[in-house]
Length: 109
Image (cartoon, rainbow, N blue to C red; front, top):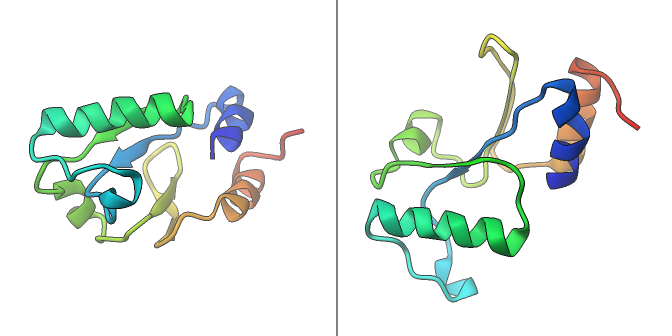
């Protein structure tokens, strides 16, 4: 995803990661956060560990945004500049996202 971000950022495409509830935090030695501050600490750690350049936002502790957009486990949304939803995936698919962006925005080298 980070490579796609770097390829398409110069074309004006914006990417955002949404931090929501962790499905299996114990797999990486984490504990589900109880406060928003803990959730923000997880984001900071994820950015550091993953070397992420993509901006992150944190959902509320009640996961209001996750519920509003469909409770998908690893969702991916492609929106046009006016906010019209062009593609929705229950599970992120970077290869397909790259093909979608080539179709809507144009290919990159």
